[in-house]
Length: 77
Image (cartoon, rainbow, N blue to C red; front, top):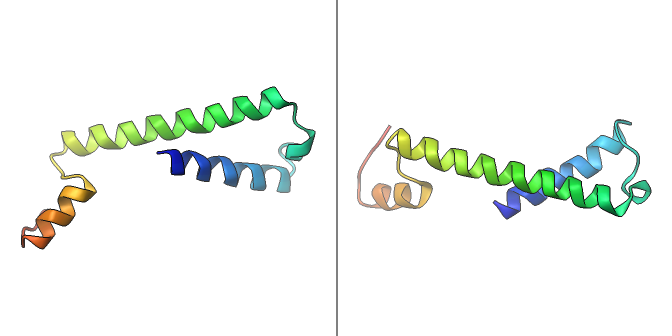
């Protein structure tokens, strides 16, 4: 989930100033940078937790278990 947070934050820091939605990062106060990083981190945490819950509720194996099942010759859909 940390990688997802960094990906979200990195894309945001590049694309939003590029389209003129925000000023460049160098113009941001430090507290705004921290708040933005916190927002991206919380988003990634909630998205990852939601995916885990939905996967379990649907009875689907997580990706590691899916690999094990595939190696054993099982199929799931």
